[in-house]
Structure formats: structure tokens, C-alpha cells
Amino acid sequence: MNANTTTATPAIATAGEHDPFEILDASDFTFSRRAWVDAAPARVYDLISDVSAVGRWSPNTSDVTFDRGAGPRVGAWFSGRNHKDGRQWTTRSQVVRADPGTAFAFVVGGAEDGIVQWSWSCHPRGRGTVVEQSWQLLRLDSVLGTTRGDLDALRDYMTDSVETTLLSLAQWIAENPAVTGRSGH
Image 1: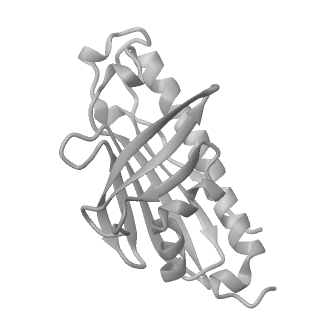
Image 2: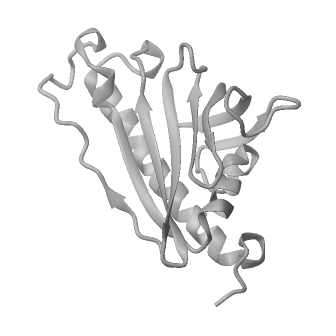
Image 3: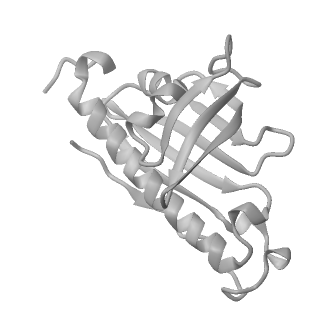
């Protein structure tokens, strides 16, 4: 596997770890990670926009399905099961960007009043693609935590999850060359 993960520095905040979220700015809680994968951008897009496949790579997501008749297009809704620390819950998400071969994004809770945006972008690099996955907190909600420390911990947990997801995606692509259009190496 030839995957490289780069890191972005999170926003530096002046608030204390225990400050209540009422004084925090949601835009402080965002990050992006990247990995190179051995597949063309169009094929990578097909994989990441097929939300039912995310469970192959994500350490805390499973049973993701588009609503009946929906697919990877702007406005489409899907549900997925998440798990963390022995707890499970289902989320509803809405696709907010679907540019084949380039970018796919969705908002947990829907475009109008969502809480988190997940974005994927594909950039050609050599014979493969640099896949970038981003996580952005859109608004503060006590369900995610009530202090800066809670939200920092959530962002750090999601960062680890994304890094695992990207590395797993790169490995899956390397191990499935027929599915990804590569003849093997």
C-alpha cells in the first residue's frame, strides 16, 4: 500500500478547555486529512459516493443506505448507524455536493439545520488520486458536548477515524485492483 496521510493544524483557540459552548465558535472545530490511492478520481468518487460502502473503511459507521430511490445527488437523504464507546445511534444525512470525479459532501441532520458536514474531494496525482476527507462542525449542539474540552475530544476522535478510513480505503483499493480498474502490480 502506498498511502500518505498529511495533517492540518487545527485552529488555535484562546478559550479554556472547560469554557461552555455558548462562548465557542463552531468553525474552530474542523480538519482535513489526505491519502494517495491507486485509482483514478472517477473511480474513487464512485466508491466514496456509494454511501453503503463506507462501512468497509470507517471504524465507526455501518449499515449506511440511501433512502429508497435516492442516490448520490444533491438533495438525496440517507441513514447510517454509528457507534462509539459501546453506544450506537442512527443519523440522517443529506447530500449537499455531488460532482462526479471531483467532490462529494453531506450534512448530518440535513442542509437546512445540520450539525456536521463531511466532505470528500479527489485530485489526480500521477497514476492515482489524492483523496481528501474533511469534517466541519456547522453549529454547536449539546449532544456533541458542552465544553471546549468535549468538542476538542470529539474532533480528535473524528480525526483518528478519518485517518483510519483513508488508510483503509487506500488498502482496500490496492487489494481490489479489478474493482478499481487497475490490473495489479
